[in-house]
Image (cartoon, rainbow, N blue to C red; front, side, top):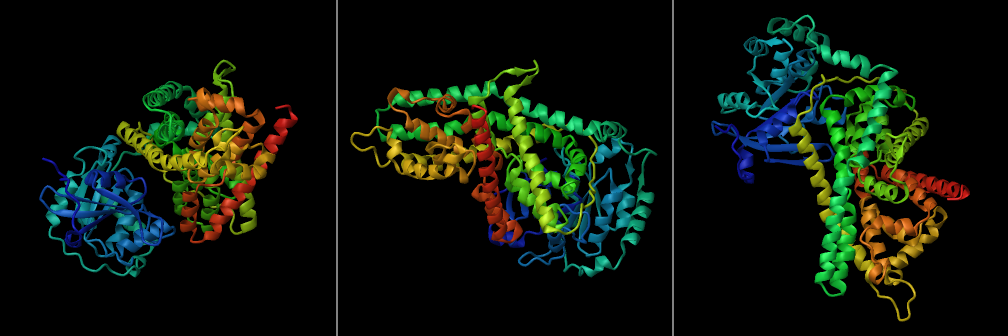
Amino acid sequence: MGAVEKQVAPTPAAVARTPMMALLGNPNCGKTALFNRLTGARQKVANYAGVTIERKEGAFTTSGGNSFRVLDLPGAYSLSAHTPDEEITRDVVAGLRKGDAAPDVVVCVVNATNLRLNLRLVLEIKRLGLPMILALNMVDVAKKRGIAIDADVLSRELGMPVVETVAVQAGGEKSLLRALDMMWPLSAGKPNPLSAIDAVGVEETQREVRRILDLAVSAPAQSHDVLSEKIDNVVLHPVIGPVILAVLMFLVFQAVFSWATPPMDMIKDGVDHLGGMVKDAMPDGILRSLLVEGILGGAGSVLVFLPQILILFFFILFLEDCGYLPRAAFLLDRLMGGVGLSGRAFIPLLSSFACAIPGVMAARTIQNRRDRLVTIMIAPLMTCSARLPVYALIIAAFIPNRDVGGIFNLQGLVLFVLYFAGIISAMAVAWVMKRFMGGEGKQPLMMELPAYHWPHMRNLALGLWERAKIFLTRVGTVILTLMILLWVLSSFPGAPEGATHPPIYYSLAGIIGRGLEFIFAPIGFNWQICIALVPGMAAREVAVGALGTVYALSQSGDEVAQTLAPIIASSWTLPTALSLLAWYVFAPQCIATLSTVRRETGSVRYAWLMAGYLFALAYVASFLTYRIALAFGG
């Protein structure tokens, strides 16, 4: 019945007796989908000792009652490592990592539609002498394309069990579980030294791959996806392709404002209603102020932007799952080549639209160290989702919600310009850095293009749920904690006798804000904005919640507003609003990102360099924006 039995977490002693299975294969072979299918919720994510490369480990029990630990290794094309990812995979399989024994069994996952590329890695791992199983994944897709694979012949020629799996389907892992039961008990010895891999040349390995394919695989004369090729003739066209990419990105940002309005209004009305209920139910005092102005006025101001973030990520996940994003990397390869980068930097930079942290970590797949370092340094200039609440707040307050040309939304146009400004700035910074760092020129881009397919709705739903969970967790932990701390700083000490300003003006936060105002006044920032910038260093979206708290406490009596946008619209000038938008295009990174940069580069110097150059760019951009806007009568 159930192929995988969920268990309670094993004890350390049980873990020591439980054999380890390692999953490895080429990128995009479905390895991680198989890992998720095997482990379900029984998995944990950490980093390998000494590096920030993600380590996914889980556990499962076969239908025969045999328990396994399973490790999902980073994707690799060869054990002749060229990137930090491939080094980890090589060292784990060969038992070279301190504290990690070699796996008891290796399951090499291959894409059944592209065995010519995948079998080279299989033959390399086989030379290590470890127990192995070959998992022919995506066999359903291979059959649809007319590719016939004789698993028995393949097993005979490779000298290992061969099973068929469909990782995206329930039950698609059962044949692998049966094969593991048949191998039980495992008798893994010490793997052969890595020199065994180099004992056979690449050309000889490729000849062996071709020999095995001739015996075990038959495919139609045109085994490639004809539809994908036809689409690529248009999508990858040197003129039409970039236009399609630009239009797609433009429509995404239009949808972020157009589609998000109804759910945002619902959340705002709900927060306002809850705030009103708390005010009516509680007497005036410190506790009511904390709940209404501190928690609801702060965290509630950030929560309202959840629909916009989910809409943005819906499109990113959709384009990724259908196979378009690798094509976008190729389209941008020429643009990035102009600044000395290759299109391989596109994926880390795209990841940075979610958050700079995974973008910085994704740069480890870039082989050239200098390219990797430059990509890390410009990743924060991509407009991460934490900026979106700030942009949306200011745009809604100062940019009219009207159509342009009868089809475009003016607010969406402004948001598109802000995202585009971040991209152009990143390219400019990369060009400068490459000139100062010297080294090799543009690196050629080699990337496997998956066939187009309709996205799996389950994957989309899980991706959006993960994104929502991350955002709500930040609202309920980091942002909420900072809002309470900011409320305390903004409420104490109270106003003196005969005070002419709101109490926050005399508080600790007010004193800090007025001190910083001396530095930021030339770019149009008032003391309230200065207060919000400080907790914004922990997480950028906290600035919106901080403004909500600060302005709620800056009002008095019945003047306390429940909506932040009208308050800043009446309190700021247009030059100030534009200056703050320019500031957040380049805003210095949150502390978590700087910490990741230090770990990923192995030096605190690059973290300080990133913080310094971003602060300088932000200040200069805001100064020029503010002064130009004033000159034009803003």
